[in-house]
Length: 161
Image: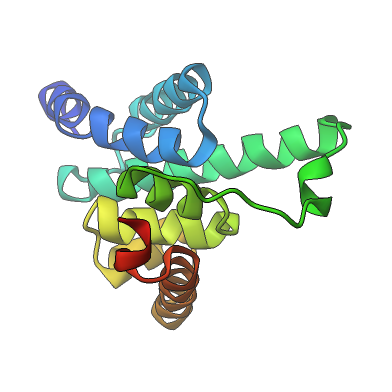
């Protein structure tokens, strides 16, 4: 990969990677750090990476970095989560977009990642499998389960309006 190709990859993909990571971790500074780390790793490994594969490389690197950070935070964080014990949920949403984001937040980490890659970023099953280190059938199963959960969570659109 040349310096010019590297610069093109920054212009083309940095915003997409940032939005993907931000949707998963909800922390702007951490998302920016992950994007920066991904591009740093690309720069260090630029010679063996072909420009045609740079998008997949960057998303894979960012995804794995995000997973490492999440795992580290889970080990370090010793806070109590009382929301697990709550049985009453308020669903007084006036915006369908809010409902969808709330539903996506409740998905398990892997389901959230694959559904965001597929439906928000438009990746194919094969590309998602490469990014997440899963096989295509696992990706399809996770996407299916996430969509079923979202459908059940949201319910009928008529109930929301």
